[in-house]
Image (cartoon, rainbow, N blue to C red; front, side):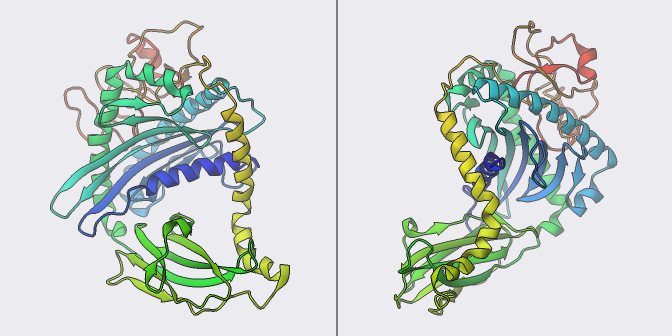
Length: 453
């Protein structure tokens, strides 16, 4: 049950990643995203840490950090070869600062939501950009900068109008505060539309050989007894092992697609080897003799692949409870953690809905901010005067050392122009400091204070 909200949180971002990814054959879409996840307390689950951060280029992980190892590392061979040692050193310091920031702010949001520490709560931040490439021209498609709490949307940036959007009452105070700092919104828009795109194109250039590798889907269609209705079968179409992730899968009856409202879909999910899979199912009568097939279209296929169902049921002769158990055994094994998670999230969501989200908690502060006029993301120059001890809880975050570039905090891909530094590793660190502009010494020591997201 501890893992419940964790699964929901990652699933939420997975859905965001998939929205709008199907492009025409003539145009390719490419993306660069950075994701941060902080837990309110440790959990005893393998591979789950209190704080993790990663970069994703075209849905492939290019770097990774967790609070246990405390080191930003490359996840692609070309990243290790192309990026210098100081890129990773500075990136490590940047991630450590963000870890501190998240540790404080997840507690601030818990207080605001009136949550105690008996359950695990999750604060996430995701930002990045997408471009369209039609071969002759590369154009900006969209930028995303969003926060979630316990797997639900908390705050997001509307790139078109340069304002923050608060989908829940608890985030309204933060939205108002951030919108009242125009330079923060200007920086956010500039990062999403320009700096992020520059890094995306640079990374694509570095990893073009690896990124061009593609893999066609393997297609399977089969039927098993429905565990919910003994008179029905669950007909499943599975496409797996494909890359890129954009794919179209249809279950057809007499060559006509079954209506989507009758289809159960897993959504596109990652495999361990960097490829993807998608599973779709429909319930049919056990004695139905209709012609069903699985229709799959992917960029690696010259023609759609059509796999016809042979009319057989894999476990229909096994009978009784044992047959059903064998039929779903593998699925149960794979999803047992997620099953417990679902119950846990439901409990948390229900609890959240009973709270008055408009209570006067500490106002979250943006994660990283422009430095004076240098627009240093997350490097935190000071845009607001010092706060008193009774004001919002603040957290240390890495600060620019004079004009030295900070990894991922943005300075370095491009030479400074008019005092505006570019990110040192592509990852934004927007946010603004509560220190005064004269607090340069503490800023350089990484001790200036930022409030909650």
